[in-house]
Image 1 (cartoon, rainbow, N blue to C red):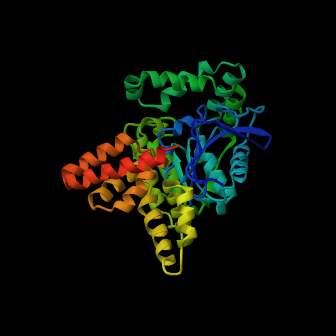
Image 2: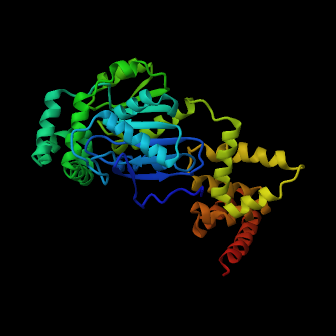
Image 3: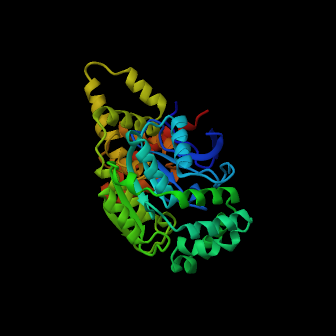
Length: 400
């Protein structure tokens, strides 16, 4: 199985519980940790597009359209929350994912809670955003079900969308607001009505209160759909912290993705660290992705008793350490590495990392800028030598 991340531009489908689910997988297949992102009612996996890629350098990420949403099938209504939970289990089973951190907004957060109750051993942590243990009233959901059954989501969509984002979003990003209105209106009526029925019937107070899974609760300060007090009730039941996100309403992943990313990173840092074996596997995965399968295979084949412990050390503590932290993307880390190797200078390592630029998205133009910057701060001779090495390596690499 390849350690290369999947192409996020390519849609993927699989049949789970007789439902074709559209999903997107990013990051290395052998990553030690997986993040699964769950969307809200009337949206699809695209609401996570500004968040998920921030973790895909070192973690496996999964986005998917719940049944009745996006490009997934919309079986006849009504649905139950456990239907959605079963879809999530089937998706993870088919992808070969044993445990995951679930990141869910609104109904996605309720699915995450229900999954954790049904499969605690498979839930590494919960990031619950703009959600609760019970959302809305029967009258609210019945009104929306009626609109969906009449093929008239346009009747309720503007009011629903007004709760997704703050007034500032509509003022400053009107084209995006129109796009998300289109997303909502074009949701399959059966899917919308089915999930409304699931929300109408769902009450997770008792089972969520029994959860022993690490969790954090996030809520947009301007969320009127699932207001801060509802999220506070959830946080209290879980014994989890609640963080309010300024400048956001019901879907902070669209409106304030940087804040969501920062909170997820902090939460991940509170989880138990992976063991040495997992750290080694993570480091090996990143090392392969950056330096290339062939290079790592040669290095592994040439290991002797003399340097075996050293190779394990650099795989665990360099590639499984800073290279796997996730705060900086792989391309940025590679640019920093190239600059340091140029300045020291470390010519053999520099040549190796220049060869690896084809794996990390570093261009010849990027190399030129790195070497020019090093010339200013570390001296012209080392930069001049770096240009010489780069010309030679790139000529060899480009030679058919």
